[in-house]
Image 1: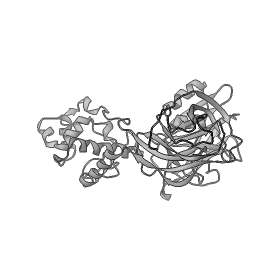
Image 2 (image 1 turned 90 degrees about the vertical axis):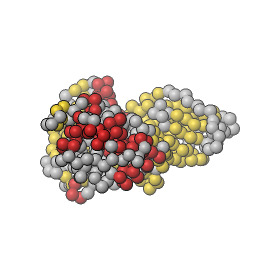
Image 3 (image 1 turned 120 degrees about the vertical axis):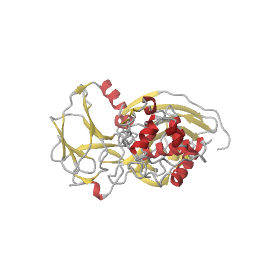
Image 4 (image 1 turned 30 degrees about the vertical axis):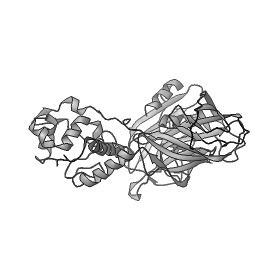
Length: 425
């Protein structure tokens, strides 16, 4: 696309419940409470649409089957957050039962012509605060009433990652001799997972450049670290510019999110015996998860749902007993999902064939063991979408190697309260 273009952004919100496109012949568009955006575009003009989520949809002239200068109607839907996925029953599980970590799901439809395949490829740019180079493009298909995802083996392009790549190279060159590259464990130096959430950005610059200067100036945090690490000084990196040091910590912040390191998983000092309480302002999370914005770039060829996903690999050593949920009583319109606290993963539970009050994870109904990344915490979200709309959210559950049997009781009511609660997951 060489010339740009007027941007046509005419947004209206439509709520679709249980909507299905009968002409598709492929995947039913089973959406519940989805917010669709409507756009009008002129058939023979290059156009860029921008969704309310900031997703850019680049459409070349004559992508759709229509006559010159004709106005056509498009609808666009996206699910980027765990709340979006719960509300719309768009889960992150592939057609083999593996857990997927989503970078965003979306669908574009030509409502004027109701065609399945587009005449030209459409480029999609999805903003993200986490740049995961292992993402692939997945397409939707239905299996036993659940929307699952099939890997197309198409890699996803990442944009705006120049500083991130520089930071990774510098980290590997200068930091890994003392700091564990997994970011989770101590080595010669401390683990650095999520350090950006616990240390002031200016302090990180000064300490990385020359920790001795801070120690000699009487900085309480520097003195605390010196004492905790047997009076070993951190190597000075005065040859690095401010931007290069910032790039290193941008890489650490991004890699912490990619690895799913929980905020409190790596412990950071807050007090020392010899200096007392560390100055509180040095423990404020100055750098946040929204500091940087990258883009995932992929293409659309038809109106099927597309999901940008990373396959969450687990080892056989992480096999656990299935998670089994027993309801306290029967419910008519029951929905239960497992939501990872530190990853964009939402997995559905389904009732067992033997007992409709007993639920297991989708694809695990007949298994004696399931793969699971030990140490990850999840929330169990259960709701009955009947007239009273009852729900419960079991927070901070950490599955065990054995005995993952839980009893659920829906002890809260109100759809509005439920929707607000899942926004915080």
